[in-house]
Every structure is written in structure tokens, then in C-alpha cells.
Length: 162
Image 1: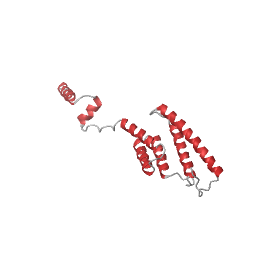
Image 2 (image 1 turned 30 degrees about the vertical axis):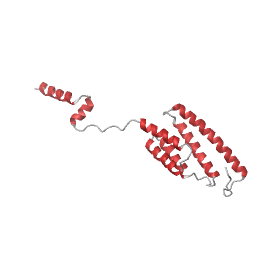
Image 3 (image 1 turned 135 degrees about the vertical axis):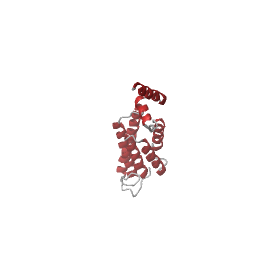
Image 4 (image 1 turned 180 degrees about the horizontal axis):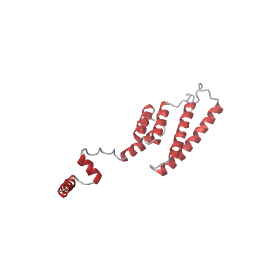
């Protein structure tokens, strides 16, 4: 990594940040390996730890690039996507991962996470269909009978009531 003369870091500070960055990337890789073992049922604690490491990595990268700890726009979008994922909003997560990639097509892990979210969306249950309207439809839903059965049942009730 080339040193930026305007970043205000001494060579010792820069080296310490680069070492911390390498350590956090190793931590992130270990956390992601744990996440892979869980499949789709990842504990929230683990998701939060991954999000924290990703945020801290983005902050260190920004500091090393001279942005004084301000995460890049891509890092901010990635962080929001991860938060949406924690909340279970796959569509919002997908939107933010796409925005991160629009901002920086080479942003670490954004494409991988986007692919995972798209797979989860593809396998998610479709939204529930609206229930049929009308009183017979309501009865059909409650009793679990078809229309013909309901008509026959109604006729039998009417005949039996005489």
C-alpha cells in the first residue's frame, strides 16, 4: 500500500493500522466460516460480529486511504445492507448491496453477499395470496370444503330445518 503524505499517519501508525487490518480480516474470515456452517439459520450474535468486523475494516481502510475514519459510501451501503439482513429484510439488503457495488464494483464481499441474498430471495416463500372474497369463500376457508360441498351442505341444512 503506498503511503499518502497527506494522511497524517506516521510510518509506525500506518504499520500498526495495516497489522490491525490484517488481523481483522482474518477474524472476519473465521466468522464467515462459522456463518457458512449455520446455513440460513445464522445466530444474530454471529451476524452482528461479522457486521462489526466489516465496519471496523472499512474504517481502517478509510483511515489508511486518508479519509480520516470516514467510511466510503460503498462501506456505508454495505453496512446498511448487513443491518437489513440482520432485520430479515432480504429485499432491502439486496438493494443496499447493489448500491455498494454501484459505488465500488470491487468492494470486498459485496458481490458474494448479494449472490447469497438473491439465492435466499429465490428460495423464500412467495407472498401469501389474497383470500377469496364473499361469504361462501370465507366459509370455504374456515371449513376447508370446496364450493360444491358447501352448496350441498347448505341444501341439507335447509331441508333438515323443515
